[in-house]
Length: 395
Image (cartoon, rainbow, N blue to C red; front, side, top):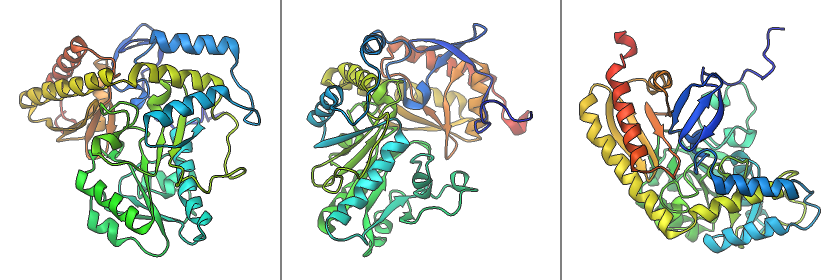
């Protein structure tokens, strides 16, 4: 048999973790890795956080799963907590970010259908976005590497230039249902949208009764030093998709919406077998216990500034390799002057885990629980690795 038991859709590398502790991952043969990727912004409390671990253990001993045919005290409690903390009036729980975005897309379309305008079913989206791997979410992007071989794609999306307000407003027509956007593009290269751009989208939505849909799967849940990035920008969306860090490593996502935006989401319009299961709800509560307070969020902002400053001070020592730092809070990108993926591959051999992104950017997404010593360990290790790195065309 030529095919592997695990379907070969990932270019899996040599790192084979079997245990984690804080900012460290350990391989099956004892290898040690500094994990500043956090499972791509998922393990926001690091590995083996005692409060999260205890909450999952206790819930697993009590009740893991029941059908959504029944009442959900656990789901109701977490939904109410999220409502109290955010712009939202209602929450639908999912198992992943792609599912959360799918629900957000359906909610935006259903809003107009319920208002007697079923023809308003086209979301305006943005170049280099990443919204997931389902048919709807790959249809919402222009990235050919995600779309190749999956035609016919779904209709209902119009892609325009990111952070270009004139292009976004010019795309509005009689079919438009709203905008779907990552306020900070993650896979696209840690690209924060400008305040003027997002405020312009909000104004257009208010004036033309359109839905502003934020994909905060990667930038949400305290990563920017705000519980959600919309707070950093000083506006609120109508609908928001969240996942990754919300479960701290346990599969969990959610679609948040205002009462107005969710007017079409009535009985029978959406569902999920596993979404909102008691075990996931326990994980979500434990994460919010840690991150959903002003002191923790202020610390994330301060640590983000210290990490950014340390990286900026390091860059001149490796000016042939590094260009600049971008991002917000502890969602940072280090722009390279050469292939970022080759550098990320090299760093693994030096015991440092990061994630490549578009525009030759390396994503730096550490656990939000890092301290000053962790920042020094990372920056010193990164600098030492850069000293030894040879550009591929110079090798």
